[in-house]
Length: 221
Image (cartoon, rainbow, N blue to C red; front, side, top):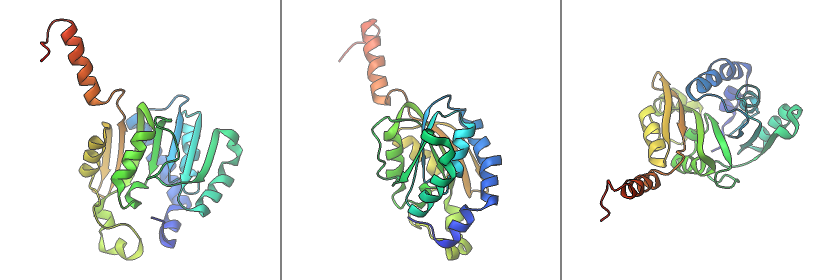
């Protein structure tokens, strides 16, 4: 869902940029660690402030970034031009990510998933494009903020099936992630880091059973 004019103004100003730079990015890296040369995707990059921080502070070697809004993509391309071929910016949709399975070492979400009506599809797509062992860094707006009568008057969000902090954590786990760490503020905002396991849980269990059987400690039935 595209932002309205009010939210665009809220998301594209020096105060928001300062918050990302001095609070959100440090917190996400504190929770999840740096990337040491990895290939990274940012979903919903806006005018490119988050992408710039990923390049400058996370240790990422290359960042692909996309946004649903062509106007924001144009602004991001101008902002990030100096990074050359370390960054690629395009129009894209988090429910239909134009990337191969296992393409990225990490995915960053600076407040985009709550804009998606079927947000669980977005989590599934992010899980798909992460490498085994890859990591999601997410900053999200929670149900309490979205459904507040004041903000409902001035912002445009999907209103059905919104998530709480715990609901977002549970959805990550159901998608196949393992939680690394999370924080929440006023039950309105949350920061979460989660891993895509090296092996799917069922495969790992099968491998453990096979190893135990080979050692003679498990009867195969």
